[in-house]
Image (cartoon, rainbow, N blue to C red):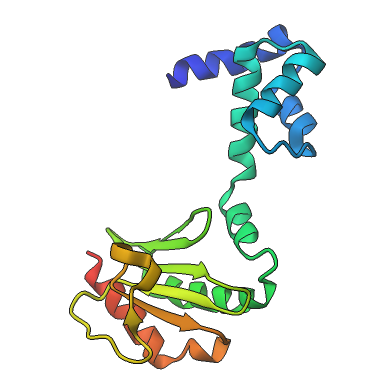
Length: 180
């Protein structure tokens, strides 16, 4: 499949009059809410065949969903939480070279061999930090997983950067060590 896609990209300038990068530039400022709107735009406004239009829109979307874009979009309207997020990430990166930071649409997973931490801006004033600590009892601060369900065993609700303290760091480190 990748070979066929690469062939399509290579043929794009000849078949559509522009390279993939040129098409991406054209679509960069368009705000289509649906994939089909972008495809229809390219077909009607630029006379591109459906196959090329679909490929261009798909590959343009991938670029807009970079890791940085996903995180940026999670914190739109919740900018006050960004320092907390950045502090959590900076601490988690110190645990080892095998910490993989995986942004998704609504959260960021921290994965070793398995996910051990999940960071989610829950409200405009709170980050929910999910942890995988299967043998740890719940406490007032180290609550049950709540909306995370089985993705995590516990949840800590964080409303200030000061709450990223030694106790929280120890829980994150313990979850990291169990994720092998």
